[in-house]
Image (cartoon, rainbow, N blue to C red; front, side, top):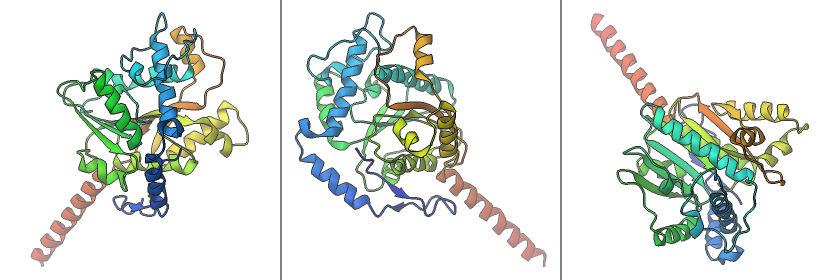
Length: 317
């Protein structure tokens, strides 16, 4: 499961607005085209997304569910077995939902939400968005299109007064594509990553690069990092070592990050977790850098002031 929209970081510093396509991108696109011809039963991206939808469906049938996803049923696998305990994924979903809703409703000026997903995320339909919210979904195109058909058949609709836009994960340049669809780097945004196919650390660093390039300073990035990525980079598997490694990874891309311990969260929610270990580490990160758009605006203003100063000095002579 690889992230197919990757970019070079060669021009990150001066200025970061110049974004080049990765040499491996054409290979990734060919893989995406080949995947389009796979049967759904053989497509690992489709199966993974369906498994996540099944977990949400089962959680909704708990006596006291963590959340209500009325559309998960049309995406879930047939006859899923209901577990009396909550899955880690559902506790993480609850955490991300609550943080997303809280930030969208209480951070002044947030009208942009970007969902980095598996293609079957129902948040655009099941969350009560403030009026005029623009929701972008970046996910595998094949999975998204099939899910969209099923959701439409179940009567799912985007809340009135909001705008929803899908950006295929296979797009040659995701940054340019999302900006063409209306995203603005001079306005606050909230980014949520859950289910996005990640195969390597480079894939995740590409994601960090994209968010850091586009998100205005003070924006938030919520999500889940595959835990095995940390395990391959650190010698000790202690929580302290993991947190230090994540601090370094995120800070190197302009984010201040906080990791979330699901067991503690489940305890506060009064939930028992299933016995199997979870494969992801939930996090909340705040953007500390200026976006490319902000940097470009600052540079133009600086050049304008310099030019005006030169002209005034010439007149004095």
